[in-house]
Image (tube, rainbow, N blue to C red; front, top):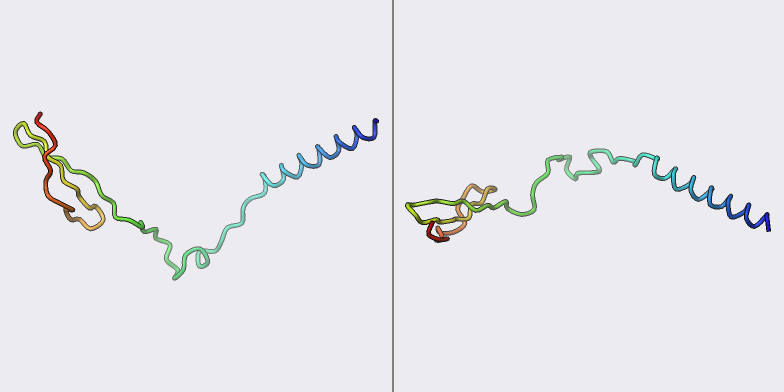
Amino acid sequence: MKTKIMRRIAAAIGIASCSLCLLVTPAASLPAQAAAPGGSTVAEPNQDIKEWRFLQIGSKLYKRLWNCSTGEWEGPWIFVRNL
């Protein structure tokens, strides 16, 4: 009976110490050449970055989609509401 308890305690301590070692061990890092093909380390977005721009003319509010990546408008001004 005592040997079973001692074996379970020893196994629990062993598992805990192994998992602790895995948490403390630093992760290996890749060299810059392997991480980015072509030697480029500049991150480029996969999609264009777009945001809504608003314009108030008198008591009317308009919006238009602006492409920040290309610096161009994506469509016409759209009426939103009266203020």
